[in-house]
Structures are given as C-alpha cells and as structure tokens.
Image (cartoon, rainbow, N blue to C red; front, side):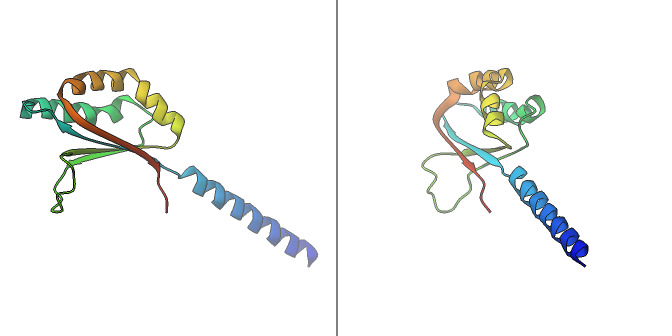
Length: 127
C-alpha cells in the first residue's frame, strides 16, 4: 500500500512539474508597434510599408506570430495613430535579435522617411 501511495505521489508531482513547465514555456512577449504616416505619404508608399512589415515573419525566425490592422475605433482616442502591428516572441532575446536583424533594419530604412509618429510598447502577456 505504501508503494502505491508513494508511486501516486511521485506521479502527481511529476505531472505538476510538467504542467508548470509547460505554462512557463507559453509566456508570450508582445511587441506592439503603432504609427502615423507623414503628410504626403502615398497609398502606394503605405502599401509597400505594410507589405514589408508583413514579410518579416517569413524572414525572421524569432517571430512567433504577427498581425496588423488600421484604426477603426469610434472613440477617437488614437491620437492620430493609424496603423497597428502586433508581433509575438517567446523571449526577450528573440525580440532583441529581431530588432537588429538585417531584414528588420532594411524594413525600418523603408519606413523611416514616411514615419510621422511612432509608438512601441512591449509587454509579457498575462492570463
């Protein structure tokens, strides 16, 4: 009987450690990028920039997910920010590697001449 109880205790402990480890591995670092384009930026320029950002996950393996969109809030609290890009990483190292990756650097060079107002916020997603 003691062996059965000890075996059950060990099994439950291993399951608990495995579950805790799995939860830790699923922490996600969100990198939120919002901006407004300078006056005179054409629709073609914007399309090129959006497409360039959309291509980054194919070029940079540390990006775990990506989505983007334009503001459509009726609250009008966007402070002129029009575009939002949402990039997900699993570690700060992955995010930091992304920031200096040549593909990201090349994208920023295309964006910079058209960028009026940027806002970047990174956070660890909480349940």
